Image (cartoon, rainbow, N blue to C red; front, side, top):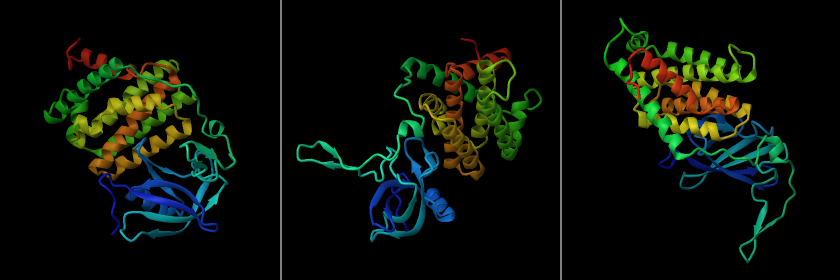
Length: 308
């Protein structure tokens, strides 16, 4: 039996099957390892994005697996691959080990860069930052919203509230289907093929709808607010400056994790969904607070939350 660490991860050394060159080291969880074995191409777990990714999904420099070896203590993997595309490193080099450590502790680059990562990954040197007050505001609003959904779940108000009826029915298949529809519409807003009033107001509307179905799913699965921390996930998506391709990966991962029905996986799926809302807000150049402010205003009109 493989020994994953406390975070459910195991390190994997990736080696060129022909030359023996070490190309990279990354982490896998059980699911990433399973996908690697099923597809024959390496998949890893991103600790920063809290998601599974296929190596080369953006650059096209994928890795075809030949064999997977296990060390004596069963706590690390050696995976021999054929590197399809010349670069395994996200910095554009053949191997991640492209620098030599010198006696004075400086580095010497000993390899040629194969591709420019700023072109391949559409990255930019600009950064987006969120001040602590904005984060506190967002957390306060999202906690208010989630408290209402938990109340509508715990107290049967089906005759007065459609939301309460949905929470009483606990039909996660229906909730996931509605979420998928709203995610698609939010995507369409950013692509310009789902238009009502314009990108910014439509992002607020559709973003609030995505958040609504995410919260209903979280409530149906009896997750606590601290299990999902949606404000952090939303802001992570807002500041990540991801490409559309990366955002679509988040969307797909959200739905896939929710479909498992397993608590931890569902929580991660909900986080991916909120991160997608954040990405959409950044694309539309609106405040990350806007969808939550819209939802709170709707609830205040229905007397479900107190006005500030």
